[in-house]
Image (cartoon, rainbow, N blue to C red; front, side):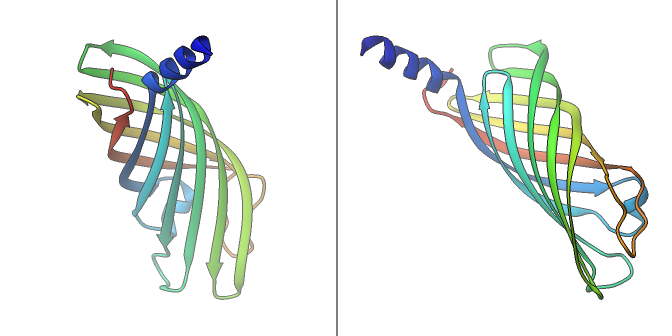
Length: 171
């Protein structure tokens, strides 16, 4: 019983929950059709591993009724390259699962794709609250092309995110 309690306390000591908000930009072939979009995200972090969910809705550049919805779940590892008591700077690397739904004049198209996420992360610790900023490059690997929108086999999205995290017992 005591061992389980200690294990639970150690788990929560390193567990962090948070939310982020930022900009998501398609920069490769799909960037010719869709513009910059804002994205909300939630995340859960344990030690150096983090999992998060990001939702993005892109608007078509030429038509108002053309939308691209991207749901992204990613898991990645943070490799610290600079660490102090109150701040850290990390390189991140992981994989993503992406559900892409495109709504346009002729109907809807749906695709499920895997991807690679890499980037950098800065975290400033303020007691139990942590200020967090991320810059990601999300590479989505395509398995097909849409009917009316030619897409490369690989597309890239840049995410610039800012947010806060909360440690249950501080660090």
